[in-house]
Length: 156
Image (cartoon, rainbow, N blue to C red; front, top):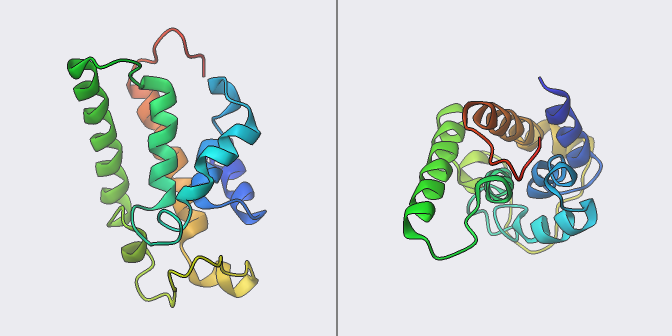
């Protein structure tokens, strides 16, 4: 387990959502202040606003990948290369965890999609895989970054 992965887990345990926890451990190294990263990623927790759609950890991976490999213009070829990377990240996460969809990852966990966040209690952490998913997402992204050259503008 990497130190960045452990830090992401600690962010989650301290009350940040899953997406914030993933983006948060990369933000400052990528030229984004922590507060901005937290604000940008805040709507993606709980599978996008607790709607239980795409897992927030996956959204956090994608946001981080966008900061590293993102496209600034309308270059279709560059977008295709980026989308290939995003699909690879999604595939790795799904292969390791069975899905990229929050409600599927929480299967068997009583979970509503009301907009009110669940209380973070010991029981919450015992029932949900979220802490481990946060760690998995960071580790998947770290490995992916090592395997894929980082543009010179980025220094991780």
